[in-house]
Length: 223
Image 1 (cartoon, rainbow, N blue to C red):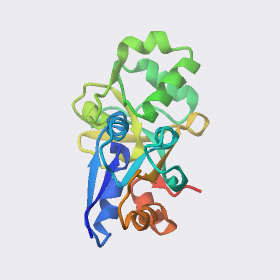
Image 2 (image 1 turned 90 degrees about the horizontal axis):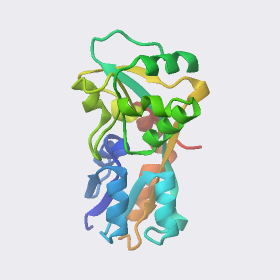
Image 3 (image 1 turned 180 degrees about the horizontal axis):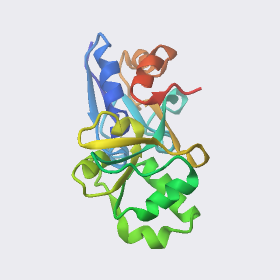
Image 4 (image 1 turned 180 degrees about the vertical axis):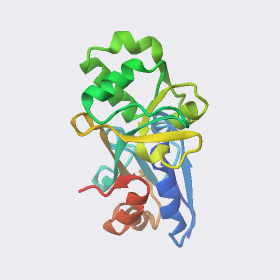
């Protein structure tokens, strides 16, 4: 069986690595920033499976870069918040408390992915976009927000919970309060010329049997 090639964004990298470890055939996983992953697929690089935020994958499907009829939900992921380890823990338990903690933070880190876009929209909805813009630090593509937090480049870091769990040098505050929660769906689809065994691997990634492992990584099975 030839090695199957998969490309994903960083948010699902650890989950996919564990799923691949339980797969009997050889699989190569390329995990990069979501923008870079979509660019590589658009430029014609061959992948058997593509795993990205649902909106990005739907765009690739509409453009004919993946097989649209194979698109399936992989995992749902909530946005988390972290601070440098050992610092006083700000309150994020309600929308008002989160807003106050954001205003009190010197620097705020966010990602290039869907969680970052959602965060900026939240700041706009609060009427704080202009006030906060000088204090925002976007992590370069492929660089986890957790690194910015651990190095104290930012006081608050926002990213997918799965990318913050277990990272050194940070204290995880939790997810956003329910009234402003941000949930991103990551999906999977077969590449335009997916090889033999690709459909079975897609089922292994997306099927209900993988739900317990997704919970271990701070994600949930799409319903």
